[in-house]
Image 1 (cartoon, rainbow, N blue to C red):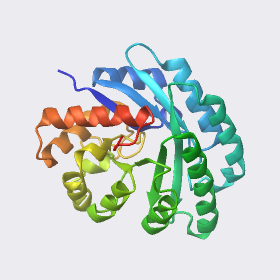
Image 2: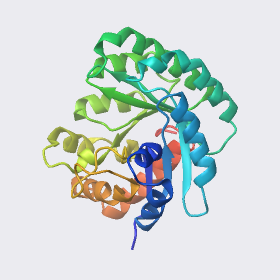
Image 3: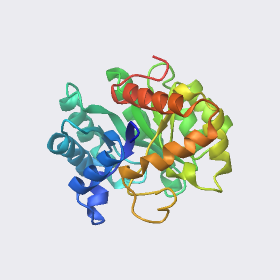
Image 4: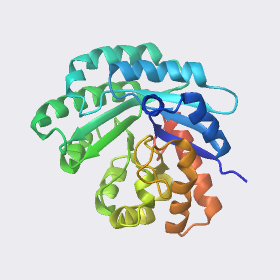
Length: 268
C-alpha cells in the first residue's frame, strides 16, 4: 500500500533539463503515493515557469503548488526582485500559490555578497509578512545571518527552513521563531548524525519532508538524479528516528505539509 505524501520542495523544471520529462516525473511520483508537489522558483524565469507548471500539470490525482522567489546564489537576479513580487501580487488569489521562495542566505557560495543577500531577504520577508505568505528559506553556512534576518520579522513572517543541514539546537531556534524544519534525502545518509538527531528531537508538528529534486537523492539512489518518487525513502528514515508510531509520523507530516502549502504556520 502506497504512503500518503507531499513533496514540499521540488524543481521539476531542472529535472526536465537533466533529461526526465515532467510528465514522467509526475507519473512515477503518483505510484509512490505522492499527492502534492511544491514546485519552487529560484529566479524570475523559474518562478514564471513554476506557475505555468502548476497550471499545466495539476490534475485530480496530483496537485502542483508553487512558490516564487530568488535564490541567494542567484545574485544576478536580485535586480528582478520587484518583478518577482509583482508576479506574486498577480498570484495571491491562486489557491495553488503557496508562498515566497526560495530565498535566504548562502555564505558557502556567495560570502562576498553577504550584505546584498541580507537586503534581498528582508525585502521578501517584508512582502511575505504583509501578505501572510510563508517563505521557503535556503540557509547554507549562514545560520547566524539567517536567524538574525528572520528574527527581525518574528511574529510577522513564517515558513520553512528547507533542506535542513544544521544541528538540533539551531533547528530549535528556527522552530521557536515559528518556522517548520524540512528534511531532504540527506536524512537517509548514514553519516548525517547531527541531522538525524535534529529529526529525532524537534517537535513532530514542526517537521516537513522534501526531495529538493533533482538534487540529494536518498540511498539507494544517492548520486543519481532525484525526483519525488523517492519520497518514501525519506519518510521511512524518519520512521526509524521518531518514537511515535509510523502511522502517526506519516499522518503528521502530511497534515503539516498541507498546512504549509495552504499558507498556515505550524503553530496555527
